[in-house]
Image (tube, rainbow, N blue to C red; front, side, top):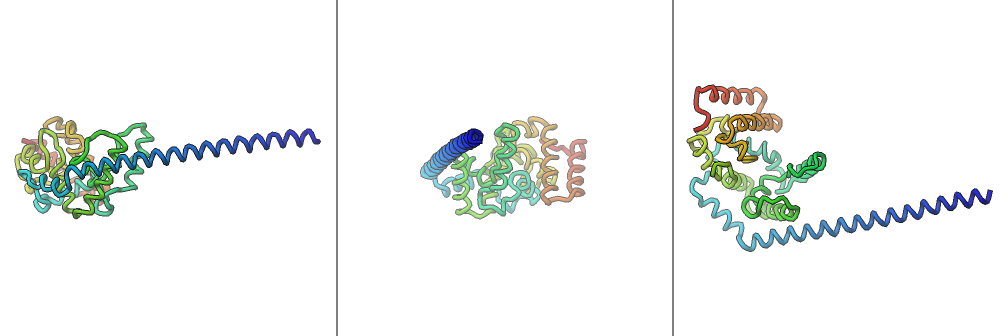
Length: 261
């Protein structure tokens, strides 16, 4: 009996010892993770601080607004701005520059697919990235982008930020901004876009080298349908309205009117 107790006590002692080692390792891993997160956070903040020290928000925004062909928000069809928000950042008017839900969802999808494709960046984050940072996918740049988004949100209204965004994004073909892209691809001013053209133009900046109509009419068309579907999902259009816009584009592609110049 004593021998059994001794053996049982020995096994219990070993389990406790292993448990302490595991707990210690978890604490070390947690501490290391916190230190790494703190270091990345500080590096990102420092990147943001240096970028803003070199060029202030007002200077950067003034340069964008002074560009030839700058298009004011009231000159854009609501169909276009709705399409942009639906496909790029459907909670744009409800967050403060950083959308935690979108970021968690993007992180989950990236881990699930073992890729770094989906970023979850808001329109404001994309604006900061486009105007201040490179497109390189680094955690420190991502953190800097968030700090810059908070700065933009503090200094400008949502409408001003959306206006700056559509005037600074790249559409391919050498066209930056919705004004230049409309004149280059469609041969018209942004205010004259049809509903189908609004949806088409909203989809191009995601991947201009693929979705620009001069690169691939087929891919541009597929992207256009993706944007339409997203607008229905977000409540900007009913399915009947989306079907009507799709029919409008089919008519253009059939030669009733030229879809692109």
